[in-house]
Length: 200
Image 1 (cartoon, one colour):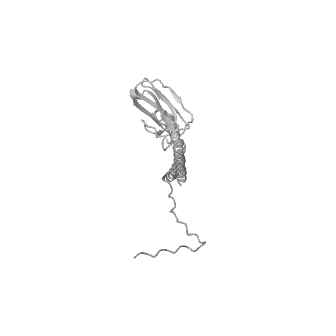
Image 2 (cartoon, one colour):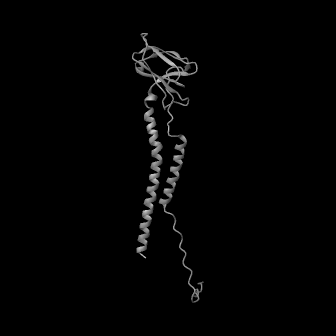
Image 3 (cartoon, one colour):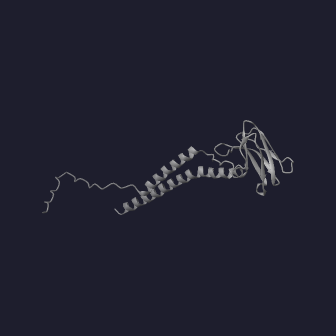
């Protein structure tokens, strides 16, 4: 059964305009918003961690103790430098070589780097020139000392530099990505609007 035709509107009354559904936002704008939120979250995490990297603890080859006095059997792999790490910079250390002669000890001052959760500091550097049994003594009743390789110290600057690049680079990359997606989407949207207007 067909419906009767609708009567025309009275004179002077305009017909109601057709309602077209609203345009859904472009996927590019949504992607730009998601990128912005992710950038803010990452920046917040980095801000909470701080600009200084957490360095690992020294790899101790001796016991850790106050008034440390140990005899270490050092092989060819230990030739070069070993570090004496302490919980503070107080105290003095000495080393005697297998021949009985005193070894070279370099004193280190305060540094911007500390190592491990216990915040160990490099206090002295021991020069090891021959394998054999070395006697190492450190005196300070209020400070714990330990002997370890210098690897954690030698890689500290590189580790800090990489963390600085990460700390600055990740938010910058996220911001650039957000702006780029937004601009590309905006330009494409304007082009399509201009092309649609010329075909009307």
